[in-house]
Image (cartoon, rainbow, N blue to C red; front, side):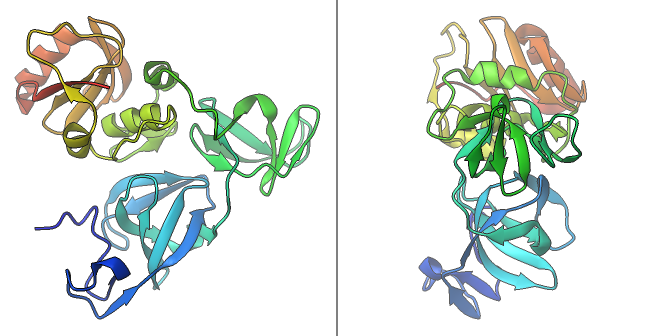
Length: 274
């Protein structure tokens, strides 16, 4: 059975490359678009539960626009779902990404000017002009110190994960407004140019190499449980977003292993090294 999270088909429409593999009334190439709002929920169905979130500038392919909802697939990780159509705009080519936990978009190149929106780490923008202290974008002005060229990824995923320390836990969250365990790991890895799928089960299957049970843990190693993932800061401490603390926290790995098993979520399923 195909995974609905990765299969761009809903019975009415399907991606052209799925013709002959799935049943659909129509097979389409889709329209290339970008997210044009700060944060948008990617839902399992129109008005349904949130699976993930997409940030400003995320590239998607839209296969159907129906009753105000777009059925689409993300280009970064292939996730499929429904996004409100008014959160999308024409395809653009972003040049920079937000490299601080968050930033403001201002009406003019002055920090006292009206702020127009708040963008989370990882949001993508097209810089159209450079001023003394601000970059101009189609949405307004952003402090130059808060943006980084897309061709200059970071080097250490743990450092990026630590930017989210204290961010509230949010199931399916992918932003500084709220994030979950797999969202944290994906943000950290993708900003370092390391491909990472969206959900923890996918990450366990596709990310990193398995460690032997006796191997010592090291910075950047990933720890997987059923439905959960965390990243080691060093040999003894893990950073992770979790519903027990309802935030991104540091936790000694020995304590986490005992606590997670005691709450009914079992033993560690895999330890993986990037």
